[in-house]
Image 1 (cartoon, rainbow, N blue to C red):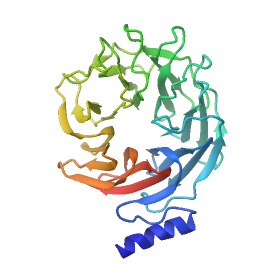
Image 2 (image 1 turned 60 degrees about the vertical axis):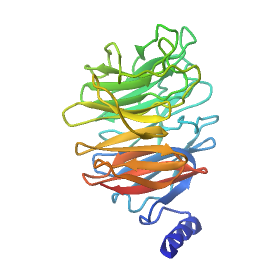
Image 3 (image 1 turned 90 degrees about the horizontal axis):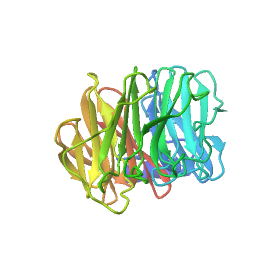
Image 4 (image 1 turned 120 degrees about the horizontal axis):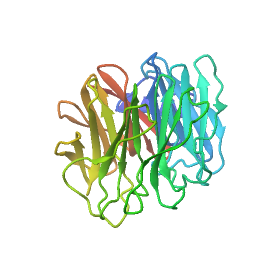
Length: 350
């Protein structure tokens, strides 16, 4: 206990960078809604918001030491709360960040591996002021980047839209409709997810169909130029008049199989397309990571950050909300989350 308190005191006193891994967590900086990615050199990159500012930090040694957080930009009225934080993805030659402002526009920033400077890219949405919910997802593979979001264009009802970048996030191509609910809107408060692997793009979102707020999956086989008709995940349904504010997460294994995790009525379920869901816990704000074809789950349960290991072991790593987990190697991962407007992180050993 004494050593743990000493490490925490050191972090708060220095404030310049997160120290070597302590147990059970360490502090990255002050802020909200962190997002994390890993590049091809196995460097870890974290982005998060604080007020109207977006901050970035990185580690080159498997998350043992993080650089002092640096300012990416000040973006007036940027969303940095309630799953509406900035997103980050690693490209072949650098990084790309997207962030949404309350007027409904999605901004992008990029930097190359050779540069320490972030550059503003083109706007992601090609119709102004249509992403007012601020709920987005981002993924990259090579120089191919895909963003998804809730979009109000034409009908003033939320639909799932997507945009591609083929130059590492510097510019964005024409926006594509992924799905519009025949019942007028998808779930208007739930974050969509996206993963791109080669020419396959997977988009998961919470629908609102026949009064049910269930998770659906859409797939593109042409790099995001077009999408198939989405299909429902799991067998059960959640009839709900309110808004769950919970979109879930997904991962893709080496065979291209999609695995998903999501919440229904306060219970956490894992599912694969076309198969029944399996209850794995209770809570909300769940996500997952595929680590060498082993699945690591994380979620929030009664204010605690829960990790469910591939062997079924349950681990509590701290207090807070909105955890996200990313593989470091075949045997470990980093989990990042927010707690009392601080960014916390923990190294998870499988």
